[in-house]
Length: 222
Image (cartoon, rainbow, N blue to C red; front, side):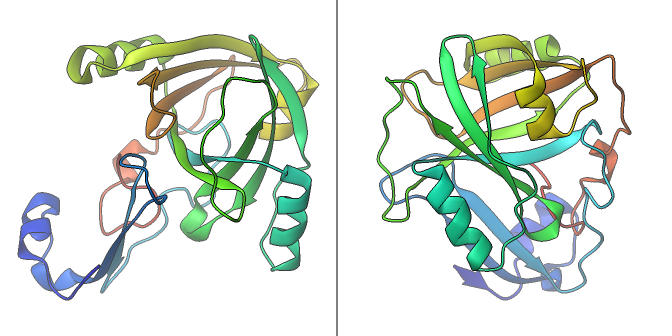
């Protein structure tokens, strides 16, 4: 944690040093990737995703793996958190999963995913949650984005699927008959800190990437 002005971060983000009040880096115990850097501004702007549609081009949500989803959702609801969808089940290739969406702070979506297939075991916290597995971004082309991360960062493309059906339509809030093109990039040996690129086939939204500039709040960058 760091409190007070930060001249170096001010240089990076082209902001006055005293614009920064408080910062915190959080992660799942034992995980070296998938960390979150929280920054509190003295004069914060508007949330990048304020009023956004599901199809808008922008960093959309963070995915968090969990176990015991029905009990988790009940516990979060009782604590006053806003659950944005019913629990839905779907298949992506050989992976059987269920997910639910929750409203986070500053218009950031939090998606809890429970992998029901075998082979995806990770270490969970006492609350049944296991770190930030994916940073999900809606893009114009999943192929172009995937190639960029492979060429520049040496990521591997872990999977590519076209997802259709009532399960994903209900989970995301898409019109009937829509298709979702998804590519996942990262390290096959590390479940945390991956990049997931989404394109909604036949649907277009506003390009909000120019708005993701500090001191705007929400997801600023990865």
